[in-house]
Image (cartoon, rainbow, N blue to C red; front, side):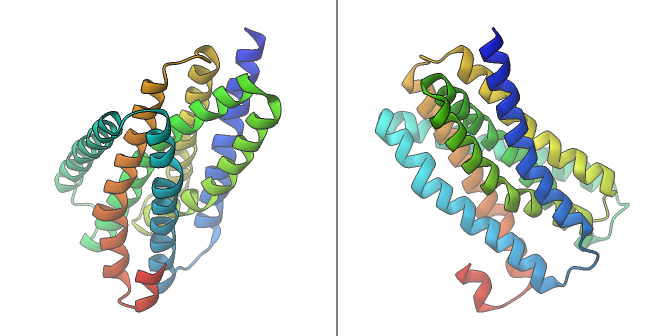
Length: 233
């Protein structure tokens, strides 16, 4: 039980530290130009696509069948569509924000939801890694922590510029990282979890992130700044 608690706390620390640091960087910068906002969103898009193509999907395909992987992707996309519709309905009912600010705020919240979902299988990987060896667990935790920093920025910047209070922005950012600790808890408990379940979790995260990139980040980035560098990133 003690080792499970330690693994959970490690996952929680590394999961929230990276996103929180990124969130702080996003909110302390006082003024963001449209070009900078476009850069952050497009950078996050490229980072997410790299994680999808070179990490999540290859790992899912390696440990399971293409059918399970496709099923997870579809489930992830469907989940994000429902989240998108739910948030959009809430914002349509609340006319407090201007249209552009409303769009930015909605994008930030959708990104935070998607990353919270994405962080669960990352926590699962940390928990399973620590069960295998401390060295592997730490290596995974540090790598995940580093790539969570720009993700925290990509959440905080649109929410802050959308008119949300800094305290609420940081709350969303921290909560999105908490799921890493939850995933680490389950990974530690079920060290011998079915590879089929792990593959579905990984591809589910890939589907959620794919929807975020194509449905939220890239369109908003192009709307903010029409430049070639946006597409390159």
